[in-house]
Length: 449
Length: 80
Image (cartoon, rainbow over all chains, first blue to last red; front, side, top):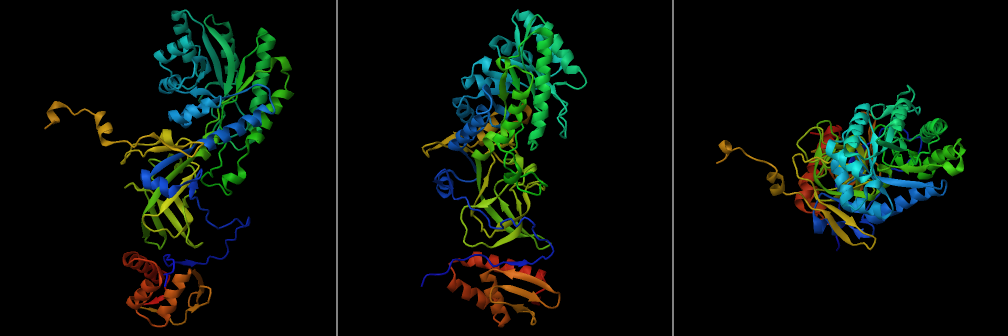
């Protein structure tokens, strides 16, 4: 006789008085395949833990975003935010869809050039641009977005020495009615600093002002903030035209669009609350079209969205290391995915899902990572199915920031796979090795032996 | 190890402890174990029974049973 399917015995206390007024489903979703490829097959071949990126998902998301803006405004250009995910394969997918590059360091700038992006399609942001970085950017004709007055003077000096005009944009921070106000980057609009520096740039012999840039924050769920920011930027563009009869080439509204992940402390899931690309596009483009800017002078609209374009395409696969019972009776499950490789778990309540389910039973569980560190918590409390040691888990929506902010801490970084549009699997970043790690170090003679 | 006598378990796995007023929900295998305990079966006998009925290895079953009994004790459902 065939034996019955087994699951471990559980007993859950019924807690009355905490009704869910939205009646959200308590059913645990299952992810067994990524783009038609079975997760069990992937893990059998490549081990655990491992990152998986879906190329079709990146392309679909990018096309959705582009369509949302291009169907409302004639001139739109996306620039891929390198810091969100600068794996070359990922960057190249975005570039093949037509995205320029938005970089914030010499390291990223080099990556963009090596990925085949010409200098005049690189937006160079950020507070740290070295002499070499700036000289290269001047020569390449990159869009250098000034962050401070010190940088303005330094860039002027270098351009003078090179006897070549630098292409310049101005990073502007403004009050769009949201908190926190990011006033640490660029020049403030409301106190007149931005206008002051704009005039200096306009009068500078070795600078050409190409555009204005603002980037209000990150994970901004208020589309109205974009409308406010766009209005202020459009007004500034007009003011510049009135004074100098000068037409700006572009307005860069930055990024900050929310992804469907749920922020810690949020009452409703991000997938229900996060605005769509159409919502953001409607807010931004309506303001531009309704502004004083005449149709023949509409600037190119640049967007530097990162998170919203790539988050959904990333999956982290791992397995259960142990089930434990905490001193107060709570269930704890330890998985081999830790905060060292899932940096975003510091601000998101990531979904941790099974790849198969034997029943709908769940237990309130704390999910810990594998590090011998108290901070290594992936979920504080989640209704989790009854998995056993060795069972696979999937964390979806991890494509943004995890493969750049990952830490080599206690363990080496896991490999990264890409599933292409033909369902072929490619290893796009190898697992790190002890040899590579040690090759960076040097032990002084007297400590050898 | 015995279940406290006055504990009631319904057919669909709802458990009520009249001493404390607490209610619990059991999954089917949890219900099965508790019913066996209620009938006075020993833990060893129950394990043997489950091994025969379910597709599980001895080590996993022992780990899970131990954990289950700890949580029953934690909720004050056992006479020790």
